Image (tube, rainbow, N blue to C red; front, top):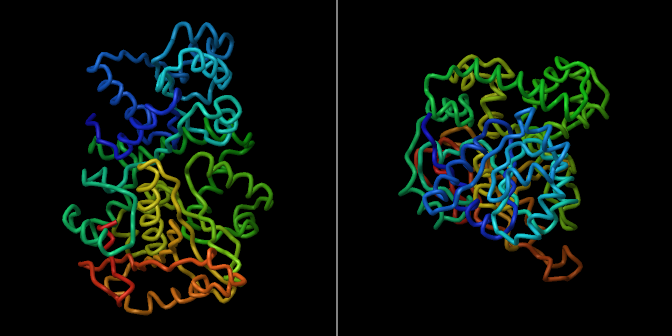
Length: 424
């Protein structure tokens, strides 16, 4: 199976040189192990022999849990330990070994269950572990084009024109329908529906049983399907609970399981003292549109593009591409959204360096100026009187984008641009 070069390679190399322990987290089957094994091969050519061991193996897992010290004698650094969440008993011993040897990048570890894993890592490896979050393939990786954290300013977008290839509506929705799992791109003979069915079965039988102690796996599967139908919508726990036939507290618990498994993410609302009417509900996005399409039984990309959820899938696809562009660079995505009690919404906000950049997402090829009509709700954050005269709290409004199916990068006005979706 062909290896697809990952955008996070440089980040992993950099982090590995900074910390004794490198932890790569992410959902199942996104290529964490493949990526690290590929980088271990590169190290091997430089004379570094890195051992590999997976805790998926029951015998190896038994040794790791029963006698962690003996395990680390057998698998001493430099070593790659796969699926560390199955034997978190190893973490204190990894800490002791890292402190003793002082070897940068001595331990490479991977994990799929971030909630439980991160709790143990923060307790055992504080200050010793560099963490890289890996999701499915981005467009930059699939098409092997340069990728970097998304910016809204015109200079950045102009530069992107020379390194991105235009794509049609059908090509975009084929990509949305297929999803982001590397195996579907590395081996074209893999059947999409069979692969996702196996993926969901494995997820339900292994991670869900372990993480949530769910008595009825089919009930959780039904809940996942309902969540997929709510992609790109604000989270209302009572609504999810009512549709799934469970309590609101169970819905909240199960949603946290989907977050910890990297199946979904919640986008926080942007608010400060200048914006009085902001709704505090987070926004939900499925991170792999292919998985969402499978759960909702879309049969092909044409049906998805013509269907009632076409716009919601388009939004989640755009969001996940921007989100991954930051994760792959080793950065925390500075992404928010806006919604107020007057139902005015802005799909995405990128906030960094004191600049707030609004982004609207529209499937249309010519959305018109109405697409930016809500950008002016942010105007109060630019006035120091909104913050009691404290100029230091003012926020600058950056270049706005309307990400859409436009055929070219064009200005909406002096401050905002229509951005073709293939340019992100």
